[in-house]
Image 1 (spheres, rainbow, N blue to C red):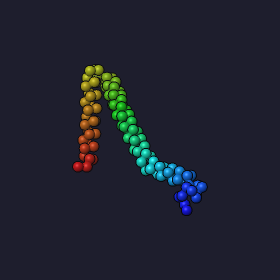
Image 2: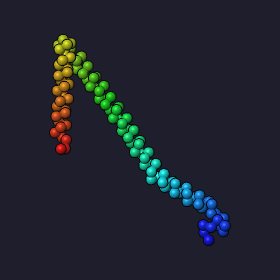
Image 3: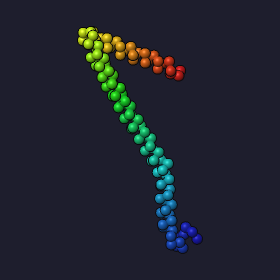
Image 4: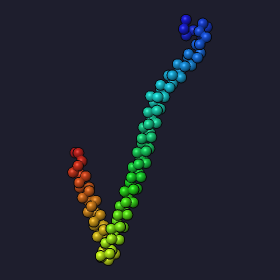
Length: 104
């Protein structure tokens, strides 16, 4: 009679194997999926933060480069204002273009 500890010498190991298999399935369905989701959230946030920092630094670099180039032809304070207007215009045009591509 299977499952009877008095007649089956492998009863304890069979039950232990079934418990291990069941807990492995539960872990596979719950914990492994949760780990994948949490890793996605963490790496997504890390990528977003690094992306924002990179865009900010590139914008500062582009502004300073434009000011240095413009200062060759006009005085420094005017070059600063012109660079702000140029970059502001480019960002405004980029924003307007992206607004036309959005879905309502």
